[in-house]
Length: 274
Image 1 (cartoon, one colour):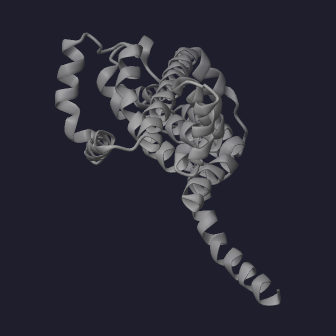
Image 2 (cartoon, rainbow, N blue to C red):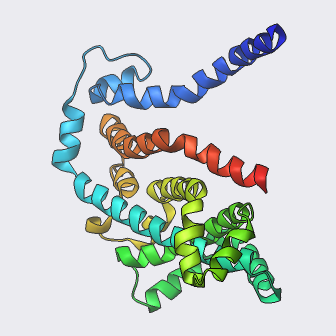
């Protein structure tokens, strides 16, 4: 016990400077939201000499931050819910009805998952233009549904831990395949479902490239795009810039803190049992 406690203290001491380094950018962003523009430029790393709260007020008055928040929320919620449902439904037959066709589909999805998004930008933009989906929130939601492949592999690994006796017993009792999925399999997927929701929500909320390319109007801009547009052509109002950054980070940070235990539970459950 003593040796274990000693190793724990050593690990904590070693991780302390790492934690300080990781926390420093957040400290720099947060303290500069309470400074004037002159003080933020001249003394960026110090605490505010005079605490200024006007930056938050100006952000809400001078930028469509609430509209951008609404756009980000719609994109995130709609995309995540649909891709989680698609991923779970796709993994169900692959795990509980393994055959040659399902294995080929899995390999096909794996090959597509390995292709970087950046390499397909030109054909994707051409396709979205031809389908008149550019600068439309629902068009970007359809684009994000490609993330269902990631959910598919997470769900597939976790579903393999579920005893097939459950589905066989349900079939004997007269339950349909659809009923087995909704009433038996899906409720058992809660840990990995929450994990998938967290990962995909953080990705979509913080995504910059896809909204930049496929959303051109200010009324459809996301919070991340609003931060980018806050940068002037020749100068940057750093307190305003960092204030918008904090407003964007706070919702997803709170969401992650509240759900972080589910990440470990979902991943460990699928990895250990599988």
